Image (tube, rainbow, N blue to C red; front, side, top):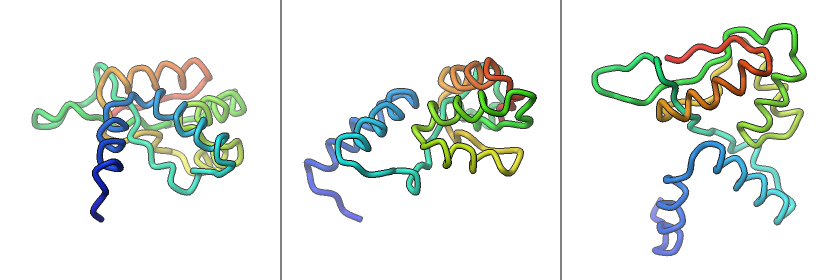
Length: 126
């Protein structure tokens, strides 16, 4: 799909955002326009230090391996990280392992991993 020049400029700016910044932007857009981006919430989450690197690719996938005892805290963390509604965040965790972010920079993955582990989840970086 070809974008207009203005739309392409916006797309280029969005590509430079961190996952946290993108989640904040999505939440603000949802509030401003009264819509939900839950159906389109395919967020390329951050990558982690110590993550598995493949053939010079510094992008990793953040995956929740176990929710742990604090399921509500983990759901809230997923909600915040991905900019989802509570229902969508809970649905994201119905199948474990659950991929939270794909092909993200290592430092961003570390950020996401830390938030999820703080909430009580067991997180793998691939």
